[in-house]
Length: 73
Image 1: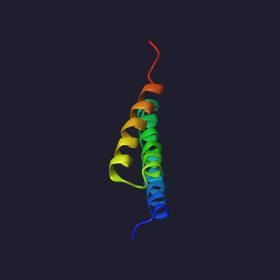
Image 2: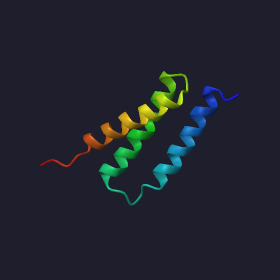
Image 3: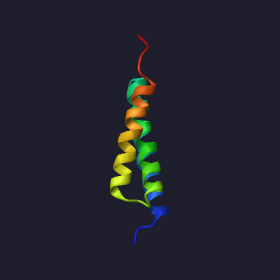
Image 4: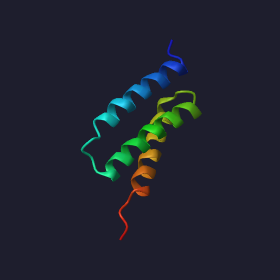
């Protein structure tokens, strides 16, 4: 059975690999990806690892990461 430690470890590895691939991304793109990863971890933690909570957290985190790093006009 999958437990929370396995979920967190797997998500951490995915985030680390993803961040490594972000070397040539814009700041806004990188912050969107990092926000999505952090949101997925938070959503998984708050909902006991449910898929809906993880995806919802990723979506919210991605939007926040995107909006925080929006260029000033």
